[in-house]
Length: 349
Ligand SMILES: [Zn+2]
Image (cartoon, rainbow, N blue to C red; front, side, top):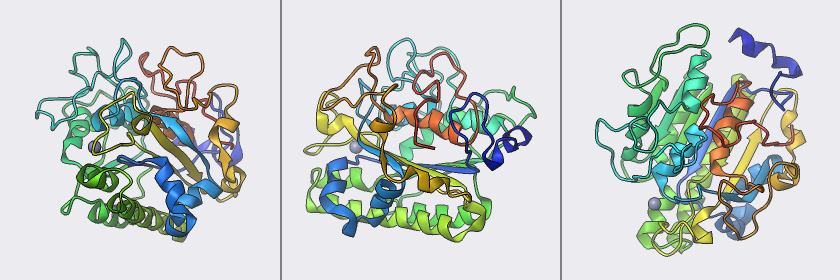
């Protein structure tokens, strides 16, 4: 905690591009979110999504993992800054309910411990939470609980349980109850890092195809959840230095999203919004992320660059190390954690 406090008040933090750090970061993953559906419904129907677009830094043309456009593989990338496959991969290819013994550490792709955004945050003495609306996300709790989490080698010993609060709640296959519970908990506990997973759009897509009226209705419902989050932050002075990152694990077409070569599956939004007492949020002011990152990222157009391409797109996997940068913390130290490893994704702060 002491180290972090040095960077408060706008002092430049060594090793970071940011002159600002947030006390709280909320990473929101909207399952199966197609960005053009946001454009299609527009600001009148999606005021919270448009708050990101007008007050944040954003793109509608981020990418998923190269090889996988499925839920568990992509969420693992968002948490670990790793690709799914390859020598650096976290190896989580499976997308089904995991066995009780399964973790990200015993996947075939990777032999050693796979560190996550939860590890770095928790090991620095900050609080963490994971609120999810699909039961199979238990995989991540199994990976970072007291039994499976690594010893804390950073400063004071904060223990092996890297996720202080894990909650799965989805009685009606939406995230409505989950978000209500999160807002109630957050108003008391003010987790430094929260990861929220919203299932609604994916459920509607599989049930009735992507971008049907049922899908659009689910998207309007998700906007309501985001509005609740903004209300919480706007009204609580102790949350006035909060950043929100909004991403998706994949898009979708027809009734599915398994084909990783389909533009409608691999194209996802990446939005960032920052509130801060010294008005740093206003400097974001609706900038487009590729415009802000011309020296390190390239808008892929309709293409799907792999990880060896010199022109990397912004990926949902950039989120892990951006979360840490926003909290004033170093990147995930693993050699394999290559996505946004330099914490050089510029959000305009
Ligand atoms: Zn799905």
